[in-house]
Length: 286
Image (cartoon, rainbow, N blue to C red; front, side, top):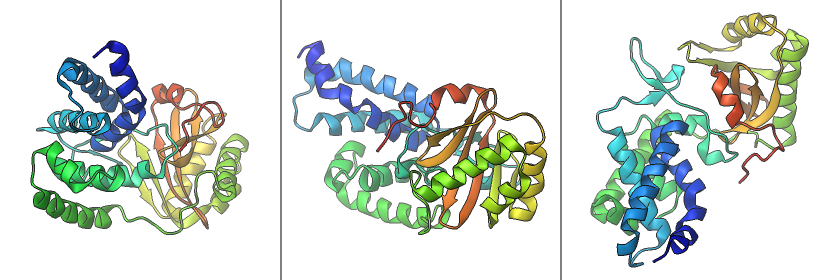
């Protein structure tokens, strides 16, 4: 089997594998490292790959085991609202792709599962692998996979329920909310910003560990930020949600609902902005 044969069979799966590793690890940086390790292991084993399974199944088995090894003995990643008093954790990173199966709430919810539960749920419910394939990937019985999946679904429903009023990121309503958010910061329009927020809106600040619950708590913090500097923002997408890239500062991800902005997650990392192109400038789609 040739280099060209390996690339033809596996190259088109890199994006899917990176998203899979991101769901498992909660970190874009670690996901890319895991994918590199996956392809290295796959290349080394390519001569012995006899096609008993599809290349997709084979690569996902390797990638899943790479991430499970990476998770051994490691604390979970979280957002500020997911931390208990005094609990330490690394932060979830945003991911530049417009897919609703990468929403921040889902990624945060996945991190509350055990690594084994996480692997089974992602392989079965997100990637739609048959239970028999998942059992083979993880070296388990089909019965064990089904039992683990049931527990994982129940836990995820508690920690990351799927709201029924989400505004799709490219919908007119979501775009209106994102445009209003950006305009409010660029024009110091506090009233316009307040009009976009739901009464139960939340604000999370990474890596500051702080989070605020309800418009009464969020608005004073946002008001201070509005007047802090001359903001320059550009629309983008992150984790299947409308977002704003802020050159020199980081990325802001919005949880847009049909009746207003329900959540704002601010990732204060200037290095992120280069990874999030402005909307319409090559952003990954569905």
